[in-house]
Amino acid sequence: MHERRTALDQLSRDLHGTPETRFEEHYAVEQLAARLAVAGFEVDKDVAGLPTAFTATHRGPSDGPTIAVLLEYDALPGIGHGCGHNLIAAGGLTAAVAAAAARPGHRGTLQVIGTPGEEGGGGKILMLERGVFQGVDAAVMFHPADRSLRARHALAASHLRIGFHGVAAHAAKAPWEGRSAAAGAQLFLTAVDSLRQFMPPTARVHGIVTRGGGAPNVVPDYTEVDIFVREATSTALDVLLPRVLAAADGAALATGTTVDHAETAPRYTERNNNMVMADRLAAYTVGLGLELEPPSEQHPAGSSDIGNVSLALPVIHPYLQICPRDTPGHSVRMREAARSQRAHDAVETMSTALAALVLDLLEDPRLLHEVRAEFQASTSVTAHGQEPR
Ligand SMILES: [Zn+2]
Ligand SMILES: [Zn+2]
Image 1 (cartoon, rainbow, N blue to C red):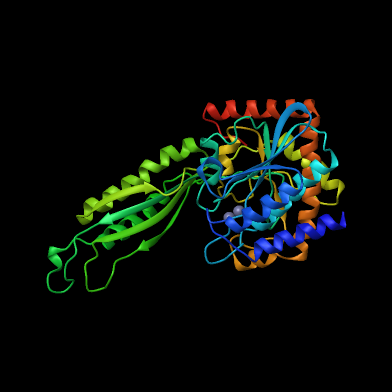
Image 2 (image 1 turned 120 degrees about the vertical axis):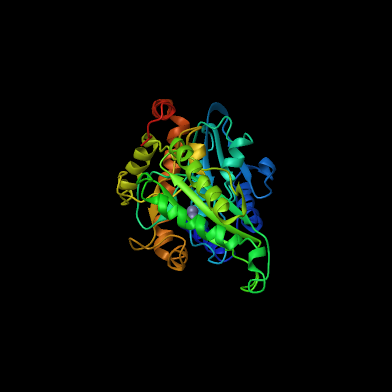
């Protein structure tokens, strides 16, 4: 047991000290794959056309379900592991290796799926679209946070890049010959703020100017705004998105510029949490002295690429407290927490509970039946336009 903890800490701190951003996680994949191979998993790298995606498979001697443990390992540009994905990778790997070691003759298939590019890359969505999750009956993971929760809702999100094209001119000698792309971007952001009062309270629209022009004495011929549009569900997002794009069209019309827009990542859907699995996990963590709070409307929601997977198969994405409450995500404080003793104590507990859950899902057909029944009921509700929980 002590050895497993030492290995967990070493791997996690090694990844923390070697941050790699989306789709560049070559060192992390090398480390994870090597350890999984030693533990008897059959490793496939370069999955789904993504060089840093992988699967590692541990087949038992008899037929049964396929249960996956999902790993994330990308860091944030500039900050490093401010989202604590080093803990997801090391904790998830520890859980899978422990489960396989505890019951090498388990039913079915235990799979570790390495999912790169969570931070703005939508790696899981690409892997889902390319068939990696086909045949997976259920998938589990956890995410570090400032509190421990069984589940939390996540918003559907569109990642837009809006470009305004103007006409360059000397800003003093002949400004009337120019058309300012900066004016287009400015008016667009103002229009979004004017719309905001008339958006549902569940909407979140926020962005930055990523290109604002070259020099103050030149009328800018190109500017760019990166903006995220989020709503409680994909259905609601489909209603909001055209209103935001209409604001961009209007800003272009008013300023004599033209506008184009593109999505810079696959669209994230809302998250459908499987509470049968989440509650079973919570029962195990409580036994180990860790309470996972039940979901609440009060918990603030972000977005994640596991949303799309959660509409295709049962998943859980519980949260594990590694730092004081209200520590902001994606911050230097969160990054420092992600290599702390406290974090690794918590991850050790979580990985033990996850291993127990994974073995239950492999070995107990009644549990998996309940998991599937809840999944089917929840997705048929979503299909009729109501919000999943
Ligand atoms: Zn994250
Ligand atoms: Zn993050």
